[in-house]
Amino acid sequence: MADLSGMWLGTYWQRGTPTRFEVTLVQGGTTLSGSILDADYLGEAQLSGTVSGRQVRFVKRYLTSNQTPIDYSGTVSEDGDHMAGQWSIAGFDAGPWEAHRSEDDLSQSWKSVLERDMVSASG
Image (tube, rainbow, N blue to C red; front, side, top):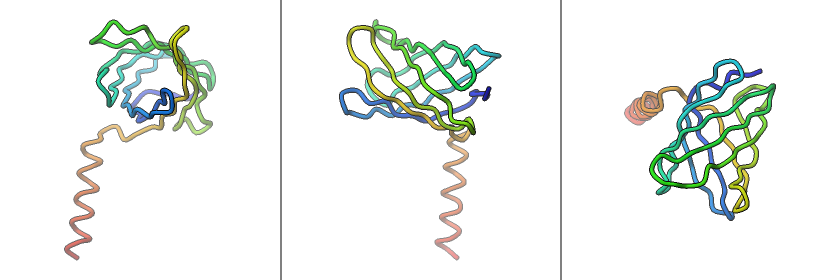
């Protein structure tokens, strides 16, 4: 069973429209918890769920609105760096989602890219 703890970047599609999200996961045994920040107006959400082998399931609950909880289920890749599946809002809507593991410190990662680009541009 892969340890899914860490930063992930993902996308979910609702009626063909993609929405990017950032998620921080904390895994303890088979229990999963964390927070998600959507790139749209819905904002931050909390999640809780489980991991069993390569299967992942969690429920996303938005903090700023009374949205219906959203169920996510999916499969983790063999290397543990990608997951994909389906989300659903009971009786209302559903669609695909995917996420890939990201650097733990996105700002440091971005700074490194900028520094490398500056060195290559001046050299």
